[in-house]
Structure formats: C-alpha cells, structure tokens
Amino acid sequence: MGQFMNYSLYNPHYGYFSKHATIFTPGEPFDFNNIEDGPAFNKLLDERYVEFEDKLDETNYDETRQLWHTPTELFRPYYGEAIARYLVTNYKLTLFPYHDLIIYEMGAGNGTMMLNILDYIRDVEPEVYQRTKYKIIEISSSLANLQQQNLNHSIHVGGHGGHAEIINRSIFDWDTYVHSPCFFLALEVFDNFGHDVIRYDMETGQPRQGCVLIDSDGEFYEYYVPDLDRSAARFLRVRQAAARRPFTTPLGPPMWRKLQSALPFAPNMTLPEYIPTRLMQFYDVLHDYFPAHRLIASDFNSLPDAVPGFSAPVVQTRYQRRNVQATTPYVHQGYFDIFFPTDFNVMEDVYRAITGKLTRLTGHDDFMKRWAYLEDTQTRNGENPLLGWYKNASVMITV
Image (cartoon, rainbow, N blue to C red; front, side, top):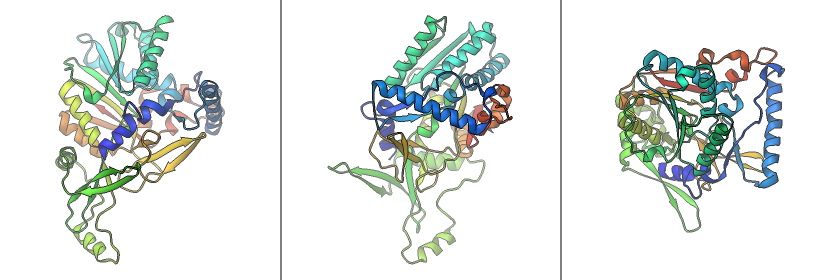
C-alpha cells in the first residue's frame, strides 16, 4: 500500500507532483497592514487565485489542474524570514565561527523559501551570508527546473550566485555522507509521505497489512495479509519501544474486542490504521547520511474530511476549479492529492529513537510568535492570518 501511494504521488511518468500539481503564487506579497480583517484577506486571496488561474489558462487550459498553496507563498516573505531568524540565531549560538551555515531543504516547491531566507540573511546578516550554503533536494524534475529558473532570475538581479544549489533527486536515493553540521528543513512534506495500512484481527489482535490488486480494467481491490513486510513490522516495533506517552490504535482492550465480536454482523478486523513508514525511512536517511543535522519540520497534526480510519488521509482532486473529496485512497493515480496528518507525539519519539537526538515540539502559532515579526502580517483590526491559518499544524525541531 505504501508503494502504491508513493507511485501515485511521485512516479516521474504519472505522479501527482510530477505531472499535475501547480503551486499557487499570489504575485505581489499581501499588504496585510492595509487589509481590514481576516475575511477581507480571504476574499482578496480568492481573487488572486482566480487571476492566477486565468493567466495559466491563457497558455494551457486544463480542467483537471491541481492547484494548492503553501504558507511560504501566502505569507511571503515573512514566513521565510521567521525561519531565517531561527536558523541564524541558532547558527550563531552553536556553530559560528567554526562552521559554515549549511541549509538543506526537501520539497521546496517554487524555491520561494530558499530565496526569502537568502535575501534575509544577505540583507540583515551579511557576515553570516558569506558563509551560507543552501541546497534544495527535489524529487520532481519539473519543480527542480522551476526552482533553478527562479534562482537564475535572482542571480540576474544581484541574487545568490554561489550560495545555492538545486539537487534533482529523491531524498530516499541519497548516498552522500554529509559530515558537516547542517540544518535540514522539511516544511509541509511529511503529509505527502506514503503510509502503509494496518488492520488488526478482532479475535487475536494480530496486525494484517493492506495490499492493492489492480485488475486488467484498472480497478483497485484492497486485501490484507498476515505477513507484514519489514518496514511495517519495524515501525510497529520502534513505535512500541520508543513511546514516552500512550498512543492510540484501532485495537481496543481485549474485553472490548470480545464484546464487539459477539455482536451480530461484527467485522473480523478493525478500522484501518495508516502508519508513516516512509517518514520513518526519512529519519533513517538523516541518521545514516546527515549525522550532524538539526531538523526543522512543520506539518498538519490533524485534518478534517479524512477517509475512514486512524491517522487517515484526505484524498481530493480538483476539477473545473472545484475541490472534489474522495472516500478512499484507491483512486486514479496521479490525479488525486493524498495527504496525511502527522501524529507528532509518536513521530517525535520515533525520531529520537532512530537519530539519538533531542527535540522540541511546539504549535505552529507558538513558533511564529517567537520568530516572526507579527506586525508584518497583522490586519487593521488586529487579526493575524499567519497565526490563525495553521492552528492544526505543529513544528518539531532538533535541540
């Protein structure tokens, strides 16, 4: 199942991010101080969406175009500047002047975060800028090309030649040992990592792993097997061994299961649980190839309108500029975004167990209150969309 999702999202020939996804760019940064309030910002954002897509349709009309936004683009350049302040402060406290400031970013979209961070460091911390190296690791060839174009444009206007590099490869194919201390940004990428599916036998409590069968007509069929593959079995072991706090699974206590199974027409398996095996493998890459890294990760900790199950994804596509929700992840590959919430309480413990590093977990709004200049994104009535838009997101950092 995890492989099915990875192919659906990242296959270079038909994957969602390879062929159909377009990242919304609002044009000029929003002047939040001259916007009346939150609803006025939402209305202005809707207008920018229409303008952006109208412009795309002039050259390439596509009724199935997948368009999505990121906080980096919505709150440009202020979101990137907040991350830059965190990076520079912690670099100067722990690494300067003995090491360069080396930043890796995975899944960098249009490359806007890179440019905002480098602009800030160049303008505010010129001594640090001379020692800054920024490297994007991007699986999508089309996005890597776009990032390179935007970087080249910045160079033409006095930008960041010699300070940035675009590496077009999957982080899971990484094989270069990076011994130097570095910061690793993983912002809004955990949600699109493939998950495996587990259901538990109601009678024995044993896990069964979900698989997908595709018939000759292209129809998908789900089935479960008692033999877990190595990755799924390892995740369950590591989660159990690493847990510092109780965690929830579909498998209730034995007495509850016994009562459930006694009911007429009772199911023989629990609801599905989606386990983040790919995220665990990302932690392995950090441990094996970036031993001196410090991670800054941010993503959703909960999502509305998910398909049935525990830690289940939202599955949606866009048709004729309208979002269409699906009730299953077994959908036409490449045309649907499949994105998951992250149980940071669990995955913080798994990260600690695999890397041996200590972490701090905080809400997105708390992180921004500390590192952003909030007056930049405050509307006239005192509301602040930067804080209000991502209440269901968390930030995990290596300390």
